[in-house]
Image (cartoon, rainbow, N blue to C red; front, side, top):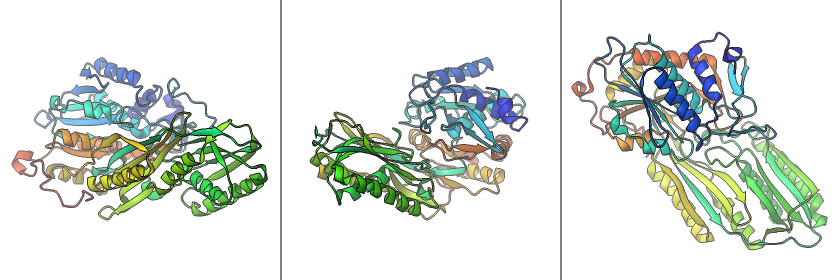
Length: 504
C-alpha cells in the first residue's frame, strides 16, 4: 500500500505510515501471530529490548531520553486486534486480505469493511514514539495486547509485575478518560426440534438491513437500530395474523460488541397468506424508518416471496421459546450516568442470533460502569433462561474500570489538555483488568478519536489525529513537579480524586 498516496504530506506522517503498515496485516481476534511477530520484529530492528509472551502480547522497552532519566517509567498500551465487519457483497477475507484505506477529504475509512482505527491508531502512536530518537520522554514500556475485542485474553495473561511503571496510559479511548465500563457476554443455547414443513406451504425470505451498526458502548446512547430486534418485531406481527414456520434464521455478524446491522429469516406460510406477508414487511419498513429517521435512517426491510426453502423448520414449541426469549431480553440503554453528560450507566445488546441444525444460539452483551448494575441485568437474563428452560453460559466477564488516576496524574492531564474535561470510557477497555492486577497502578486512557467503530462506517479525522498526537507529545515531555510519594495523593484507593466517577 502506498501510504503517501492516501495521506500525502499530512502530519503526523509517521503515525499515518505505521497505521498503513499494520493495515496491510490481517489482525482479526484469535488470529494475531502475524501482527504480533511484526511488532516484535519492529522493536528488535530498533535495537530495543523486545519480548513476546505466550498470549502473543508484545512488550518493547525504550530508555528515557536525556534529562528524563529521573522520571518514573511510563507504560503505553494499545491492543493489536480489530473488529472485522464488512458490507454485503464486499467479499473481503479478514484471514488474508489487507484493509484497503480510502481518503475522503480529511477522513480516512476502509473500502467496505471496518477500518481498525480501534485500536490501530493507538498501536501506530506507540510505534511512532518508539521509533523517534528526538522525542523527550521518560522511560517507555510499550505494551501491545492480544484479543481485546473478544475475551481480553492478552490483558488477563500479561505479567504486569514484570513492568516497572506505575502509570499506565491506554491509547484506546477517543477522548481523555479516567474510568469506564465493564462488560459481560452471555450465550444462550437450546436444541430446537425441527419438523417437516407442512405440505403445500410456500417459502419467503425477510431481511432487515441498511442499519449503521456500531459500538454497543460508545454508541449506546445514540439508540441505533438492532436488526435482530427489528426482525423479531416483524415475526411478532406475523404471530398475531397467521400460521408460519421458521426454517432459517440469523442475525448479527458473530460479534456481540457490535449492533446487528443485518438479520434474515426464511419462513414457510400458507400460500393464501403470502400477499399479506409482503404487505406486512412493507408496513414494517415504514414504521421502522419513522422511528429511526434521526437515528438510523437507512433501515430497510426486504421481503422476497416464493423462494426455495429447507424441508424442515422449527416446531411451534421451539419457536415460542425463542420468541419469548427475544421479547423479554433487555436491549438498549438500561440506565443513564448522571455524572458524565450523554453517558450510559448500563446497557445491553442482543448481538448474535443463529439457527443451526442442532442448536439455536442467542448472545447478549451487558455493559456497565457499575458492577451491581451489570450483575442485576445478568440476573434478569438468568431468570428468563430458567423460566424458559434455556441453557446459558458466561463467555466473558470483564471488570469495569474505577477511577484510579492519582492526583499528580490528574494535574498533569489538566495542564496538557486544558480544553478537554476528563470523561468516562463507554467501551470496555483493558484498564479494569490492569487495575485488578495492580490496585496501585495509576491509569488514564486517551487517544485520537475514531467514529462508528465495529462497523464498515468506521472512520477517523487526520486533523483530529494530529491534535491528539501533539497532545501525547506534550504529555510525554511534561515532567511531574513532585514525586507521588511526596504528594501523598495515592494509596491505591483513589484518594486525592473527586468523588463520583464510578457509576454506582
